[in-house]
Length: 216
Picture 1 (cartoon, rainbow, N blue to C red):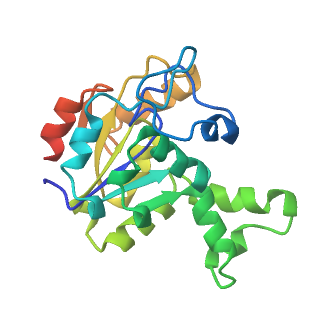
Picture 2 (picture 1 turned 180 degrees about the horizontal axis):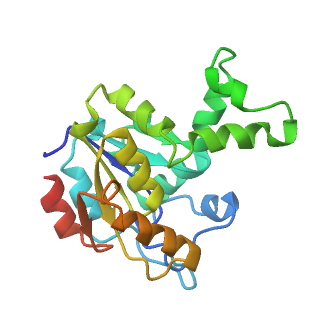
């Protein structure tokens, strides 16, 4: 394996989310097992072809996730994709999950950034932990004990590229700007053209053969 640790984004990186993703947690929890095929009208929860074969070749203790969103929701996504078996549960970092850990640590320095308004308290903490902020990337590196140069972030969003680059990690960009809203597409194109944040590698969504060559 070419890297000591591999970190994945989920939406758009592990499966095609161009048809949209669920708006609330009930849409995810309505399925109690991985899907072998996409039900009519459903355009998510089936991983890219042969992605599981690739992940199976990487040691489980060296694979993690860095994802914005609710912790349990993101873990349920992995379960429904059938990919949780290949991910180290201790290397799953989610913005709300990290914010909740901060709340349980009264001495954490970020608590001073949350303010006193209860309506925005959790929101402010989450803003400090989510990609492209450094927080989750640094937590991930600290947990593995590896240097940033030995780790790679795989993602389809500008937040993945900017956060990982600022942390000193290697980057693999998955995807296309085709299905993105204009403002998101504009931001991503700007990042991709910026020499500071330009990914080390760029491949098409779903090209698992190319991704395998980069990782194994």
